[in-house]
Amino acid sequence: MDSQVAGAKAVASAPAVAPGPVAPGGGSRRFGPVALVVAGGLSVQFGSAVAVLLMPRAGALGVVTLRLVLAALVLLLVCRPKVRGYGRADWGTVVAFGTAMAGMNVLFYQSIDRIPLGAAVTLEVLGPLILSVIASRRLVNLLWAGLAFGGVALLGGGGFDGLDPLGAGFALAAGAMWAAYIVFSARTGRRFPQADGLALAMAFGAVLTLPLGIAEAGDALLVPSTIALGLGVALLSSVLPYTLELLALRRLPAPTFAVLMSLEPAIAAGAGFLVLHQALSVTDGLAIALVIAASMGAVRTQRAAAGL
Image (tube, rainbow, N blue to C red; front, side, top):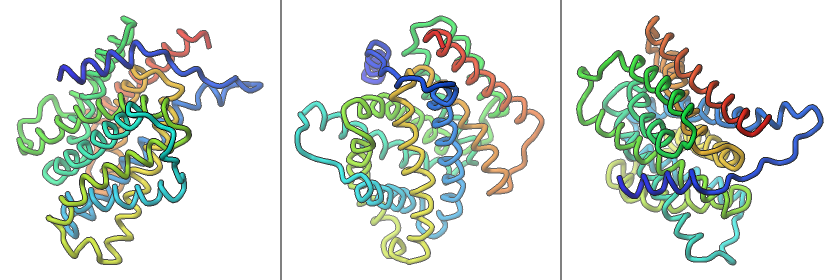
């Protein structure tokens, strides 16, 4: 926990990467990072819903392995990242990013194998919310984080007593790794051009999870239909959202990004309804409204601080 706190403070104290020049009529430049985060959230949560359907074939660890290995192959082929010219600190950041990515995925997939997708994401998002409080230097961000936390709690029905305890524990642990992912994604984006650092980190994360997937799924990982579904999960849950988030973190402060992550339970609830046929209640709708309001408030605060 101390190392995560230190990492969060480091993000808060590091100089923000300046956004590019605003084009004439500059609205698209101003809203660009926010749109990237929202698009990434939609992609990853619908990818997670598809992953739930794939788990009976390959198991939770098998799905994680397919997701990371196939995503790493796609990114390495597309990005063709250079491996020369980087120092020990650069590679240390890649290793930390890849480890956080692998840990977040393993823990989260263990969670959604035991509890509903919406509840798992609701618990997981507590990690970014706590990061937003730790990393923020503006008092108003505490207000937005508190509002988002209230929405998250409401989406969980005011308590999680009926959930599998191990599944809930996996979701909370995944939230801690998600906070670490945010920290090291931002650092990787500053040290490596384009998505090169993401491709290298994804490859390292895939190597970490490969033995786990083979041990659980074995030959099931080689079934063509399973590979095809795994590729879909990899593209939706890893390649597209992680690339969008890495690009967003180059232009968006980490505290604001962390509060925007509170949109994830709302997106997950929608994905669960459309893909997994999980019904939404009036309380769920109110919770979604709260987290959206918190996210909009965080974005407006960031724009006001930047004088936009």
